[in-house]
Image (cartoon, rainbow, N blue to C red; front, side, top):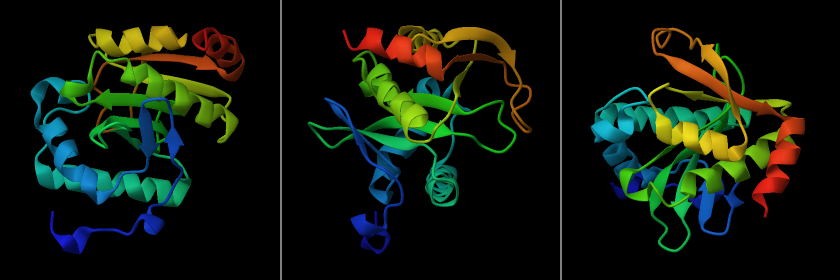
Length: 193
């Protein structure tokens, strides 16, 4: 990255959350190389729109940062505390036309299988219910994405059936998983054990 793109930390819009092993914060330009690598991997991009070239990923990051500025929600970058490495994205977001308020996640291939998705999702669900005041959270999950369905199940979400995404994603099959604020209160106490 060129030094021309370095943004001072005080200009990052949005909250920062911390868990035992992770930092969640709005995207920053230094996330771009790993985010572009992540979106270039056919396996990790399979359920989130497919492989995308670096210029499109750059626009995606800028769009997500803009979403935080305009709406106070969006995708967090997930950073591994011990290394500072960008390992994925997770959001409390509600894009225009979306079937509900979503906490959705995607991890870089080298971060899977470590419990990071559930750890980040727990913090993000807490934020969505406690800070944003949401009454309900969904997760739009491709029926073939068994790993994400497993994370949703671990969180206590249930499959509510097929959903429809807005144009141009309307032909992409998704199941709407989710839970209410009241269900999360019960499920969250179970996760603390």
